[in-house]
Image (cartoon, rainbow, N blue to C red; front, side, top):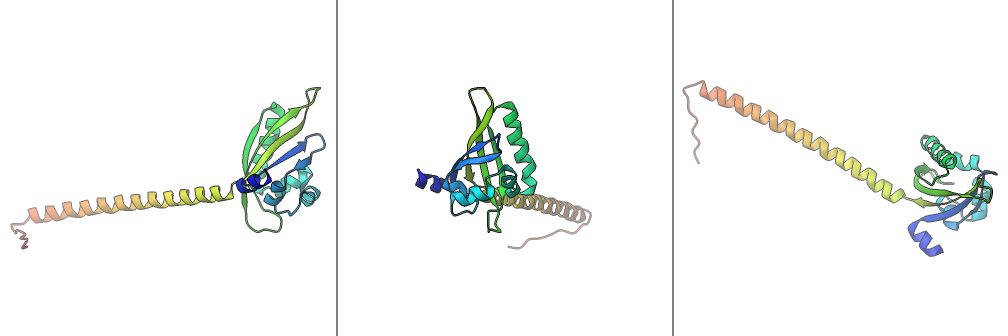
Length: 171
């Protein structure tokens, strides 16, 4: 299971909503966030406020709104966001899927879920979007050039038809 999780870049975790802390996470979660051990991850990011600080500022509100909204509604959630792993300058794209577990009195005290590092997929998507934008610009430029060429041909035909001269094409 550990090997398969590493291959797929998927980790799993259990969160205490009351204490706003991580109760458990897999080694892959720690690795995704740039930690060598689960203990180091829990010591540094085991509290909700510390964990959310690692989320890119542009994505933090989306993450909080998604998580808190799902908790309030008692429904599962699925959110993508960016982080900067510990000790790294690179940005990682993550997908988190979670659901809430009710205790016997019906309170949603715990959440369980997965985190997957989708950086490679997102980078390919961004490259594809950029290539699509370049292709659209090239198509626009080609159409503009085609129209200009047609206009030049029409002007040429008008100029020739307005004279008594002919144009010969010798092959």
